[in-house]
Image 1 (cartoon, rainbow, N blue to C red):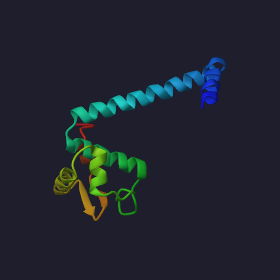
Image 2: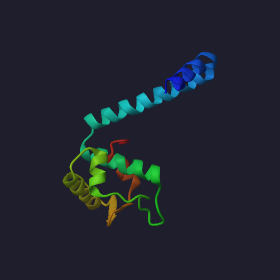
Image 3: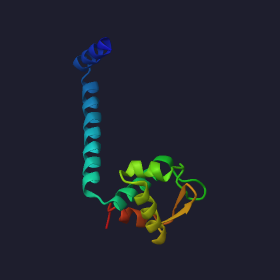
Image 4: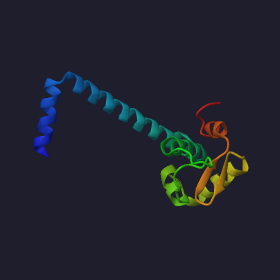
Length: 124
């Protein structure tokens, strides 16, 4: 491991483009981490859930039935949102009642993307 660290430092010295790209990647990661911390502290659980549903859509896409392309248990969703499983079950029920989503077993069908974006407090 020490040898690889030494090699990285040598590369930083002789390759300015590598140094610049490394700084850009680190800056982007820091910005994303800062945003995540802010979201966890300031957004409601419902807003975090809605944003997470949008993230899942972007990451895994939608299947032919407009369901998110990954099946997650309610417990897994709760862990991702940072809340209790019971809260996720209740909030998914609220989103369903608002006709933003439909629930098909473990699959979540997105019915109103714009409405979910608004629920996530990403736009007015």
